[in-house]
Amino acid sequence: MATKKFSRITLFTFLIIFLTFVICLSEAYTQQGPKPQDPALAKQPQVIPLQILPKDNAGNVDWVKALRQGIIKPLDTLDPKKISSPVIDLDINFKVKGDLPDVVYPHFPHTQWLACNNCHPKIFIMSAGANKITMKKIDEGQFCGRCHGVVAFPLSNCSRCHSRPKR
Image 1 (tube, one colour):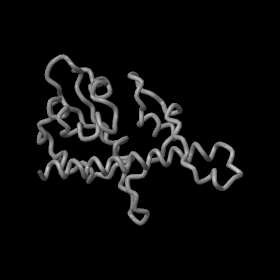
Image 2 (cartoon, rainbow, N blue to C red):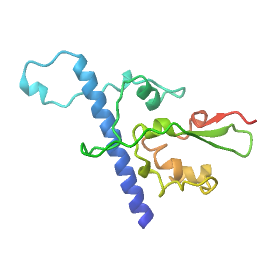
Image 3 (cartoon, one colour):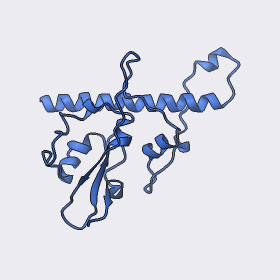
Image 4 (tube, rainbow, N blue to C red):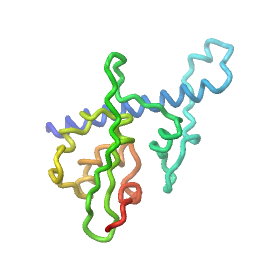
């Protein structure tokens, strides 16, 4: 029961962060166009042009590329008084059994919009080998599956994670 409650809270947190992306994108997009003269029109919700966002090789929105290109500028917190968490440029490599390339987890893009405590220590224990990650568990919504396949790119796009050739 506690896991389901935590999952809902985590999903809600990620949904809030995603909506922050959308609001930032909407504001950036609407600032480029002409301003409506009628104040009633200014209060109407803006259409979010997701078609301007870059796509990955499977046609899904590539949020990391959008971030790199400056199209979106997400916040890791909605509290204006809270200091943003530091961005961490650290790749974690996971050896994979079988023929697939090994997995690379890039902290850099994740920590540009998420605080460390979103994942540590409840989703991922910060100790090498402590997390027994499998695709089955990810498919069930554990580990990376908390976001991927829900609010981030789908699990069917294998090459996004399985990107490091075996040595």
